[in-house]
Length: 315
Image 1 (cartoon, rainbow, N blue to C red):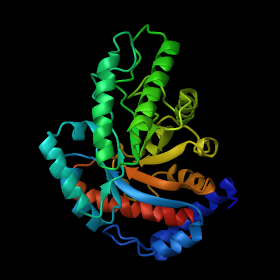
Image 2 (cartoon, helix red, strand yellow):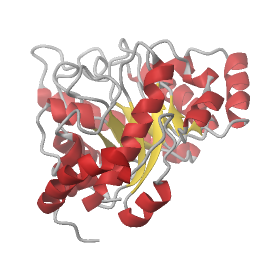
Image 3 (cartoon, helix red, strand yellow):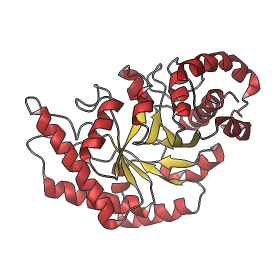
Image 4 (tube, rainbow, N blue to C red):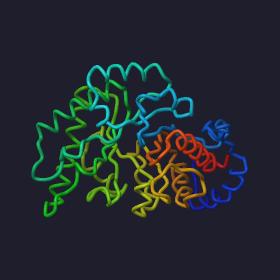
C-alpha cells in the first residue's frame, strides 16, 4: 500500500480528537475493542504487543497476568535469565509455557563489565557467555535478542573508533555464527542508544550501517522510539532501514521515558506510527519504560499503543 507520509501525518493529527472520543475505542484495561476494524484498515501494517522488565515487576513470574491485560509476549533481559540457577530456569520455562504469553524477545544482552570494545576484550570469556546465553534464549524459543548494552560497547577515551567499530562487527559475526551453528530460531537486533547511554551507535542510521558492515544474515536492527526521538532523528529513517528492521521499543520521550498514557502527549508519536504504516511494518513492539506502578501503567500503556495503531490506520 503506497502511503504519502506527510499527508498521512496531517490526517493522523486530525484523527486524534475523533479517536479519543471513541472512534477507535480501547478498553481502560488495554483490550482493543476495535482491533479488527483497525487491522482491516491497516492493510499490511500489523503490530504484536509486548513489554520489557520495568521496576520491581517480574515478567517471568507474571506472564499469566500479562496475558489478562492483553499483552501478547514479554521481553525479559538476558542478564536476568542468566542469573537463574539451572533448576530455577527450568521451572521458569515450564511455568511460562503453560501461559499464553511467552518470551518472544529479550534485551540487556550483556552485563556491563563484559566489554566487547576496547583494549581489554576477553574473547574466550565473551564466547563462553554468548554460548550459555544463547542456549537459554533458544530454550525459551525467543525470536529477537536485542544488542544495546551501552556499558559493554562503550569506547574508552583515546581508543580508535575505527577499531571499536571493527570490534563490534567481529562481535556481531561471532553471535551470528553461534546462531547458525546451533540453528537457533532468533536473530540479533542492534539497538541504537542515545548519547547518554552509549558513545557509539547512537542513531538508527548508524545501527543500520553496522548491521550491513557485519555482513551476516542473522544480524538485523531494532528501532527504539525513545532513543530516536531523544537524538532528534527523523522517523523517515524507517523508510531507509525497513529491510533490516525486526523489532521496536517504545516509551514516552516527552515525559522521562515513562509508560505512554495518551496518544496526544508527545508530538513525535504521530510521524513515527505514520512511517511504520508506510513501510508496512509487521512485527513486535515492546513498551520499554519506567514506572513506579507497573500494574497501573502497563495496561494503560498497551491501550495507548492500540490507539496509536488505530489512528495511524484511520480506524
